Amino acid sequence: MDFVEELRWRGMIHDIMPGTDELLKKEMTTAYVGIDPTAGSLHIGHLVSVMLLRHFQRAGHKPLVLVGGATGMIGDPSGKSEERVLIDEETLRSNQEAIKKQLGRFLDFESGANRAEMVNNYDWMKNFTFLEFIREVGKHITVSYMMAKDSVKKRLETGLSFTEFSYQLVQGYDFLHLYLNKNCRLQMGGSDQWGNIVTGTELIRRKSGGEAYALTCPLITKADGTKFGKTEAGNIWLDRNLTSPYRVYQFWLNVSDEDAAQYMKIFTLLNIDQIEEALENHARAPHERHLQELLAREVTSMVHSPEDYEAAVEASRILFGKGTATTLSRLDEASFLDVFEGVPKYPVDPGLFEKETPLTALLTDHTGIFSSKGELRRLISGGGLGINKEKVTDPGAAAGRGDLINGKYLLVQKGKKNYFLIIAG
Image (cartoon, rainbow, N blue to C red; front, side, top):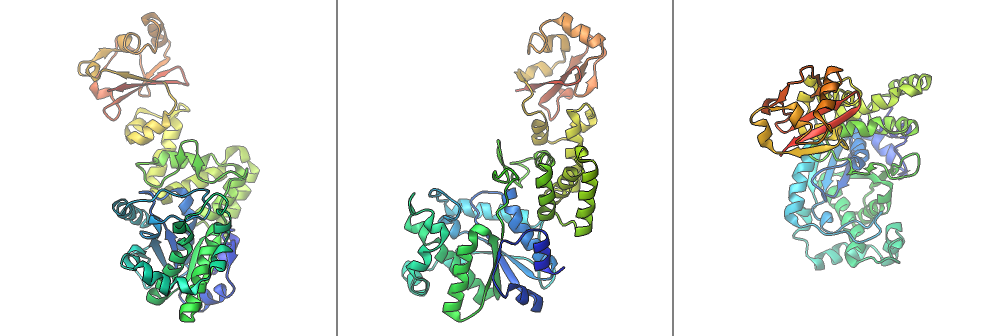
């Protein structure tokens, strides 16, 4: 399949300008997607646009990533119900560097005529004076044309500043600049960007007499209609310091059957035969959740690494009694805390571990996990106490600094399913 056919099969086309398919079949084309660096990491909501660029490059075309250092200082009104807080230049620059590093996992920036490239619209907007802008850009787009855009009409009642109203002109000029300087003929993005993208194609037509094209993908939602990528804890970030690989794995593992079938096409590079086989296997035994397991493997490995995926699988086994002390020792602190989120926690004086403290004292007097030493001894004699996934058989056993996971945590297991976390510090 060519690029457009591939996207159609994957359900990744919402709108496409006439002539786009013909252009892509005729020649290697340059296309861009814009990302506003309003945070120091991409989140999984960005993955749809990133996957567009990845498929584009795999089809032999050249992807551009426009990091919106300028537009990020304005704020796009599309899909927003209120004015966005503006970000200073220093923060934007820091965010841009972090995003570029993340994109290197998805796109090839190093080799080939179609190697990916990153540009920053602040570089060509920073010396553009207001008078120059309204003469060179503003005079070519009418107010009635701008007012007709959904992103504008939806905000008129709640309030829309001139800053956000002008956003589509700035984005339109970005497209014109890339058309003239990078031979960029296509802009892609989410369906909420259609109006802004088309403003760019119109500006290119009016300013240079050229032809440019637009393609948007649907905004991804869950089967129940709620917003994709949001959890009770907030966004699922691609930065492991903000969202651990374990939590990324768990997010995909816990999607519904209906969502898993859709997401498999959008967020993986598996081909039609592989996905159809996965759907057939899932239909035969849906309770085994093979589809979710495959989806979680593919995306976690892509976003982080196959090793991180394997570690997440091992970590997920811990709560079901299948993990070992070795498993615990391999977990980074963020993943460890994610695994035991919601487990009762007991902070204690780190000095208790400088010299070994008997478990009978640690688990009763210092934490209250057990109400009495007698109860604790009875559990030990019955084989029901575990420390860091190791069964305790000696009633006189003690815990020292060498027993702490990540130098800070001691995991207590009471029976098969009751966990407690002692925190030194």
